[in-house]
Image (cartoon, rainbow, N blue to C red):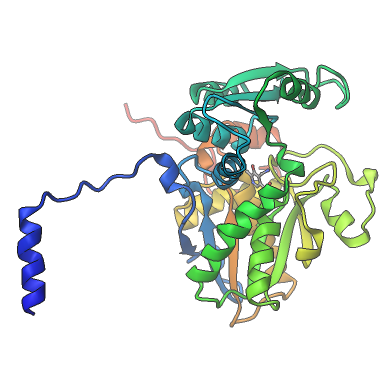
Length: 359
Ligand code: PMP
């Protein structure tokens, strides 16, 4: 009692400490787990969303950008003023640009001319130098964004090429953050993980950590129709006939990334562009979660796994929602775009186009 009193008295003589983070980088990771209340109510099991939009760059890619650059610093590969190179206009590019601002690196992103002007503007806003490369050339053409990135990496002294599809550190980043967070948040009671696979870093690193804690945890992957990942997982053969264009960005692939540990994944399911888009819109309306296209894909996969009888009343399912909805305003959250894709042809939503103008 008297000790407490002394502590209190001393404190009153000191200035209160200002509560502030040193930079946005202190907020990377430790994203919340949110119980799904409505969208899964007719399914057996307890469903929890790991909402990666709470990262400061609004996606799970903050984790790999920060981790990979810090590993390069530890190994003495990177010094302030050096240059980071990557080939993406998506979430990874944005996260690398954000981390580069705080750490004082130059950031060069070689992107495809297919990237929307909005995306290119976002990257430039974050201080990145953007090379827009023609989309309609083969990967080995010197003008392709792969080749431009490789050339710049050779030319720019002290540059680091992240190459997320073939970088082991992509897996390690999630092994050291996403995996332990989910294990601790669920107090070890997780039974199933559902996660999208693009580079495969998220699902592989998280799965590796969780299975080391409890090998019975089932890891369920999400793939897109038009991608080779599911068939490669099942046959270990690359089937180019599986490949065709699809709408969902960031999910599935037309090559086999070495950042995917196929042995850590138990099963894949494929989801359609249309159902994933409607499920993303349903997440906003039923859970108040404004998340990206692949988040819709992940919850669509949850529904399909549930319908296939994967879960029972005692299952604790964690589904990773990779990014924020704001990046998809001109796509899945735009009714005209939805209509143009034919996504309202067979599925009706309640008043999808209704806006009331008050005069
Ligand atoms: N969703 C989105 C929106 C993404 O950008 C990505 C990354 N390509 C993924 C899911 C898949 O994550 P990963 O690359 O770790 O497999």
